[in-house]
Length: 362
Ligand SMILES: Nc1nc2c(ncn2[C@@H]2O[C@H](COP(=O)(O)OP(=O)(O)O)[C@@H](O)[C@H]2O)c(=O)[nH]1
Ligand SMILES: [Mg+2]
Image (cartoon, rainbow, N blue to C red; front, side, top):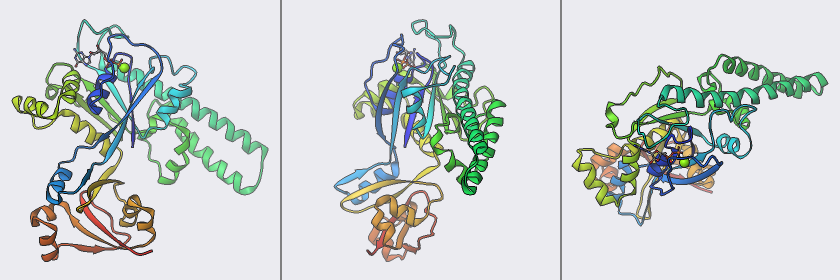
């Protein structure tokens, strides 16, 4: 899962990236203006994994992962003529976008637009994304229309006609100024669109950096911004970055000093995860306690396939126990004794936090 961090120059993207990834990239009050990408893989914090790890004392503990990419170079006006080259490439390949917006005053940090105005900045970047999609959609429509004029075999023609109808619907949406993620699209239609790099189709996480004001006083419903697959969160950027860069014990002491149970960042990381419609199941044992990522609604056989294709191919049954049931029982042995493990078939819809043991034969 890959999330691209975007925003105006100086909107504190690198600060948020450092906070999310415990990174140490240079932040600056002036933007270099160059296109540049830095990526880092981050564990999804999950207290259930910690708890299971304490129960099984495995040699290895593995959390679910998210990759964040800090992208410089997206500014007002780059969308004229379309975002292009490596910038568009990087954005298209991501599963979701994280838009960082500056929402604090600080005379030492210049703003490219001359003033601090989160709603305006949100609209600027949205406009660039929309413009990029408009250009892609228009080109595709022209191409399909030309192809249909030329004729060809029946099957190809039917396919092109279906695609044209879909792209005309997309065109209506973007021309009305709405992001594509607001549309009702079937899984088959989404599949058809997968390779076009449509940016407003991607889930969006808006992160407001509220600076030194406590994050809980911040606006959570920003600018009457209501779209599907969109989440808005507030964060004290610099504070979170400093926390992320501290040794863990020091950070814990700092947090408890302020009566905070966990860094705001953990929340953001989990939000990115659920925004993508994903959740975790676990495997446990002496070797490894591990969180695996699957789409909400995935079946036991899909979960098996995430672990290894052989497990899906030779799937017999899944032994399942819910996380809470295992914790209540106190140990796997006790859970077995009480008969809490269920046997489920291929079509079982895996629940968030299920602990699975796949029985298979190949
Ligand atoms: N006062 C204040 N300044 C911040 C905060 N977060 C970031 N900055 C400053 O904002 C400037 C731009 O940050 P940076 O992350 O480099 O922005 P980018 O260009 O979007 O990557 C830097 O000088 C940061 O130190 C914050 O929470 N409060
Ligand atoms: Mg930067």
